[in-house]
Amino acid sequence: MPVYNSVLLDIDAKETRRYAGLNKAKDFDEKLIEEACLEARLLAEPRGIWQMYDYDAATQTVLADPPFTMKGKLIGKHLAKAQKVIVLSASVGDAIEEHVTKYFADGRYAYSVILDAAGRYAYSVILDAAATAAVEQVADAMEKAIEPKVAKEGYTMRWRFSPGYGDWPLDQQPEMVRLAESEKIGVHLSDASMLVPRKSITAIIGLVPQQKEKEAHTPNGCAACDKFDCPSRKVPAGESKN
Image (cartoon, rainbow, N blue to C red; front, side, top):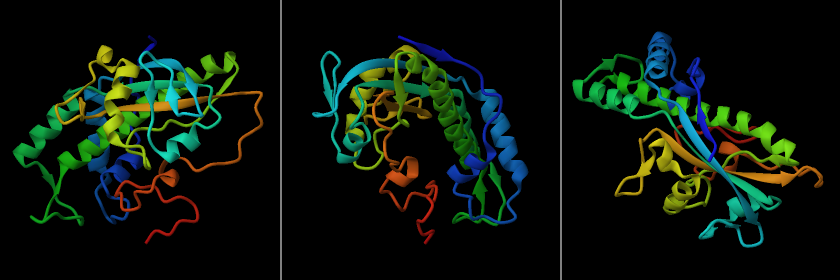
């Protein structure tokens, strides 16, 4: 039951802008993004947990007790050469979410060239985006911490993949929470099967034996996802922005 605890030295302002849907915004006050990143960093309570399991690629089954068979062609293709998997969970806690909710209720807005129906842009939205960037950074840091450990065992890591990416249905989230033992870091599911705290993630990482032939390049992240209308989408090389 490896538990990950660390601190966030900073939060990526560029990623915060993207998650806030401001990539195309011009003349937006960058100080507002910097303020949100700083506040999110001070409020964040980074934590994570991960477990390793054997994996049957032929049936897309994590060999836990009880086993977990994943749905979706894309996740099957992604883990086709894996012999083991790591299931992880990461969170930045409740405090950021509480402040986002409070700012929204208080009507704290930042006037901008990007306007909502009321002619204003909510600071709460920017803080929420900073929190999203923060939890992704926690997961990134976990991967960096895990990589040398699995390398010593003779494995190479594939990039992490979460329920909701591509055709992997979100209704398999409860199994991910179970396998990661997410509740040991305070992450659980709501009655609507949403992760709580909201700024939490689960993900799976395939472990491929190092001696296997080097894989051909396959798309990852946004390039592997078919949600082309996602406002947070990174535009992969060769893909139209329109």
